[in-house]
Length: 112
Image 1 (cartoon, rainbow, N blue to C red):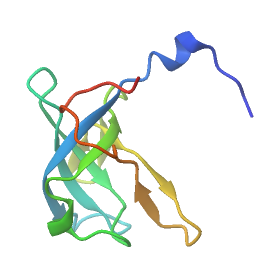
Image 2: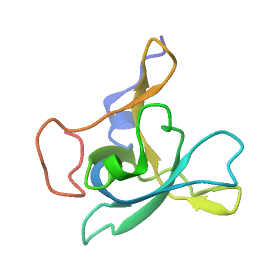
Image 3: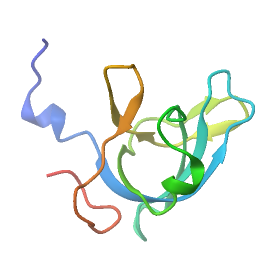
Image 4: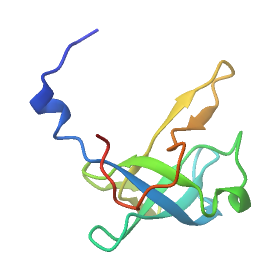
């Protein structure tokens, strides 16, 4: 495993946000949702394409807090521009389980 320096880690803007919209990404090659994630007044709402359809449906995602990297360059994914990377872990079946705070925190809070 490659080790990194603390200064490298601090460059990653890993922030908490609340999903305010989730819809099926019909044009995606692999099943995915288009998420709108609110990171608070300072950062605003960012869009993400998320391949999390195996374990989540759009209705249950609304209001869920997630952790996302917000300082990657925006990436064109089909007809949408993905502006953040919502994070998660692969389970034993290869499905993504979202990385979420275990208690409510303010949108935009940075990982400590």
